Length: 463
Image (cartoon, rainbow, N blue to C red; front, side, top):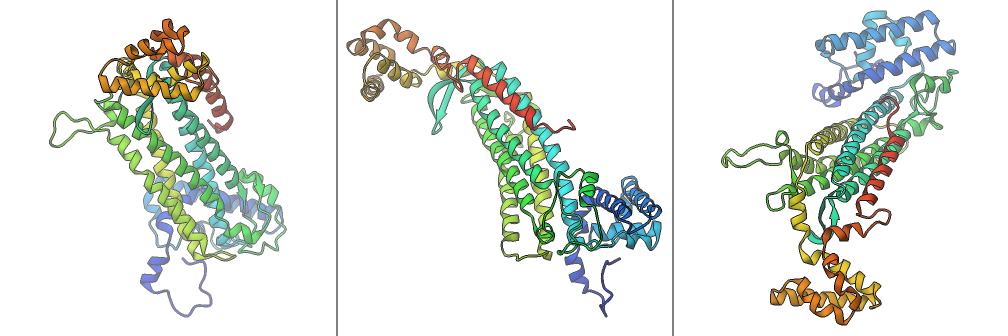
């Protein structure tokens, strides 16, 4: 069944009809389309456009469509242009011509965007639940590793000693921002467009505020033309997904590198690895590599929707049918990636001994030593140059940096002579950084507690 065609003398070209159809992918919006149609039937009743009895028949008939589709997948296998024509076709089989009356004053332009907003709202909540679980898992692991000393890296080179808890807290705070960004995108999506008609509004005296409450929307769109052409909310959602997947990709890269035998700081759960068809010894971190690889896929979805809308003037255009697959693919990819990363982090083993061995490289305390010299009165740039010279001599002569420092430092800062062993202790260096946000164990624990508090602020109410 088509929802149009009264002024046509011929049927659509077969190839074009197949090209034009979207039911193969927008059927995913069936539950949302039915919920919106039920709410609209009730709204028609409230404004006197149809009787209460007819509204009840429509609501019940729509419920039967959803029930039948869930019970029998073959129920969906009919030739329809889109999910909206599918619902009206099946509703007509149940309530007859009354099915068309349920479309009174309504346009597919507003139906499509209403269903997508409802779907995005529910999907945002589902993704937020997954993110909150990942965040809690990172916090739990961070508390376990709050005092495990490891090297921190800049430019992929060992830089200063930090704790593994500090490293985990860094990723945690990034995901906190991602969760907050997603919650904001959900808020932007939760605006009711229904009642906008095709572009000019409706002559029916609909109570749109009541309709919004019925569907759980926070607000009502203020301009009918804007409401049917707006896809900002979809781009906002995909951008939130891009940020999440990009951070997952970066975390995956760190875990791949730091779990390799060359470092051995972490052990990836075997259940998230695969073997080699040739090399019997291999356990490849394929779960992490796929998360990293799928970042490009989600980033592509954002480009796709931005390019989609860039040339569209005011009003609905058929181009906008292309919005859904970008949204669906980005959402599905990120939801799955978050779940996989949560499993990996939960099962991650921590090798404190390997971390400590790597952190005990003498040069990683060079900055700590320079600061100590400056606190003894040597101008920092001179202290920086002095320590740099000590490092250069140690590298050139092969003499331990501590031994070089014990020979040279007393002439510049005699009070440090008895403290040099302490200054060269990586664990002591981390404990010295107790400032808020620092890598000392107590600062790490406070940081993780703060992250948990922020998580609670964006946690979906349903969870």
